[in-house]
Image (cartoon, rainbow, N blue to C red; front, side, top):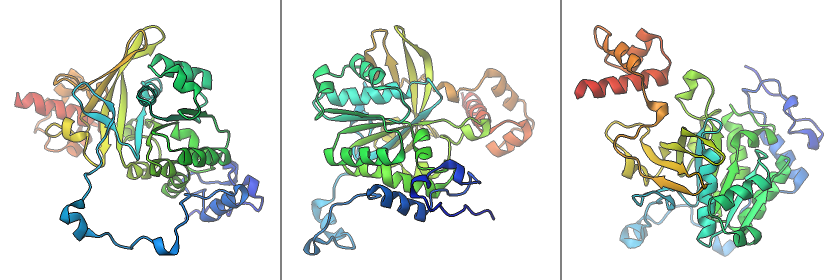
Length: 367
């Protein structure tokens, strides 16, 4: 078993990726996190001080809830589709992932512009270095009022250069209590802390430093992420550890380009539900047997106004469409396959291709 070395004595260099030999192991140890906190004077998940007489109970008062004070389960309320269903949850981490130029950033900035236009607060943490000029121009195009963008009590933009600065930004925003925060992108956040994208412990610690405080402040936190590159792993979702998916308290949407986005021409993309912890969106979208039902179709018009449509019955995520040849190959198997695993072994395909072809074969076989 390989162990990561202890963090160096120099606290300023603890987060250097070169310090660790095995990217599969946890680089962000408890000791390293303590060094970071000591060096910056920042708390890992700042909480307000609690007076002795205000200490919360250890257990919930279930009887009181059942007597009529039980709150409604969380429901998404940000980015409302043409049929009234909304995409994103407030006070939760929402995850948006896909290939480069698939429309992820357009969708998230459209959500921020929607809140700004409604008189709410929004913030953008630009770790991907898109730049303030590009970001503000996109927000203006998407309908954000210029007066709101000028007002630091309505809109804030930050482009932190390292982990310490990012944590400072997060603390300031958590105290400011924005309604929406766009974090672009997660793939750039983890390296800021010398964290391994494949380590669940590393992700959990960075989540506690960066994303959890923002969600606890009440914001709809929209975290942009990338789809895995390997064919077999793409079927599993975003890059890196599965701890990402466990941390999602809202919705995780897979974004697939429909019409390529281009200046002056617009574009479109499909948003499919990969996870919906509370089921508030999935209840409006899930069809029988649909693992990743379409949540919406996002369309950017040539004048950069946007629309969010509820999917039609014949709409299909291009990423989940099987070719006629693949469906025919499944149909030609004798005896017919009874499970995806069996079909995959017999055809030698990756998981996503097999799932798509099996689904379409079964649907054609029933029709």
